[in-house]
Image 1 (cartoon, rainbow, N blue to C red):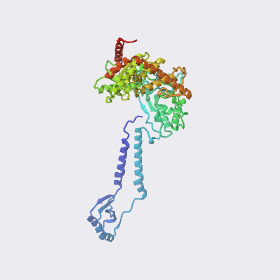
Image 2: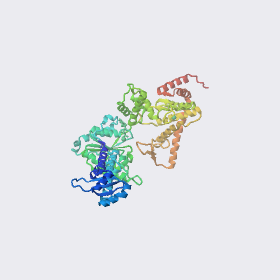
Image 3: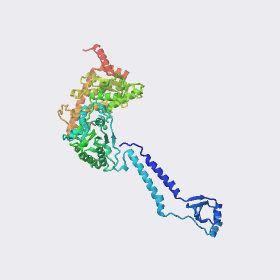
Image 4: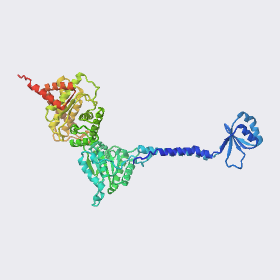
Length: 616
Ligand code: ADP
Ligand code: MG
Ligand code: ZN
């Protein structure tokens, strides 16, 4: 639950009041009244026989008068010491008048002493410390002091305020979740017919695709509270704490039913138990607790567990069996239509120029997640503010896309003329190959302004429409386009640079996929050699083949690449005039849009065809 008042203040006030009582009020009540008198007054009292007893303190003399019947109050007197006088006469006078004298002895017995000065203060300070620590640890979300009872990491919302309107696209996921919403709203409808209700659903998909958002939207649509906890928060310093947290979570949820419990990043606890060396006691206990809680609770109460992960393949099988997270809902990267919808959702909050075309932006961002797209809109708005505009224009959005893809422009990085020329040829090499081949995506923009990502320039291609399949021809021509930069350098300068490293990496990867996963090689054909280890996160693959096969795979990859490279080189040789003309233009302008590029190419074509060709 969320903290409502600054609970810090209470223990501090209590501490202050207690210490005031302890150190000021109580001593003053218990202490006898002391009156200060002068030495001569003391002498007078002595002469008048009013003194019963005298005690010599280090700095003063305490005088206990002869008891007065009329007063309860014990009054004692006190006067400063006069050492030289005392030694000569005072002792004799005291002896003469029969007054008891001496220096003070400890009047309190040891027990009260210890109680007063050691035990009580210790207990008091300890109590105050514990009060403060408990409050602090509550604030900071648990800790050593909480010993498993603490549920404050639990993040609860009465209503999330999100609905399916906030989640653009993802229609299949929404359909799958509609039933859960209906069940939360009308459980009787399901129980009366004897249907077992789903206990949990697992949302799987790459990061940033809106899994968390979707879970909140389900709670919002069903108008039920939303309890959420991240998987990593279960796993604590001490064995057993995670399990205690799971218990707490379910207890809270059941008492708040109907509600949604959301466990984010469930792979942190739900990792398969058998494939780790040594194991992790804490995680396993937590997982076991989760499994048994899921079995134990009565779903007719209206508690639905949603969980999210981007690593479904590592989850323990036990989590996925019926009666637990038996529904699996894929929340995938948005397609073109989805991207337009997401951009529109986030553009609602931003003032946009009427000319803005989000469709174009969506086409420039294949593979972008919802979170990326949100980021692009925000980046564009920030740019507009930086440029003192009062709304966002298309150029801001396009710049934002480039910033997300390639980093900010590095205005202060100055390329030498020679390098700038090389980069211009390199980029036109890519663009020209893309333009001349038929199975490639059109050029959208070419730039030779360096970026913070380290790129000295880049050629951006944007597909006309969303592609779901890639043909072998497209894959090969993609490699050709990637090779275009390096080929242009080699052709024109007869030397090569490091600038093609990233192109080479990508080309090699495509060739590798063609051979090992897509069955597009002549050597192996329709055979799978490697598998992806994770669907959503990385491109890591595993393969099991002999060293001999590995060598053949490598040879096949090299053959594909070298074939593409010579094809590209020939193409550029045939288009040498266009290459020179366009590179010169790019060198001069630094940025060329796709349209300008096509116009320039047409011009160059015109002049080259009209120029007399001399053939023998
Ligand atoms: P995940 O949990 O899948 O990693 P999140 O739910 O945290 O992703 O999404 C991050 C942000 O991205 C959301 O807050 C939202 O603003 C934006 N977002 C992601 N997907 C969508 C979508 N389909 N529609 C609208 N916004 C989205
Ligand atoms: Mg998330
Ligand atoms: Zn390149």
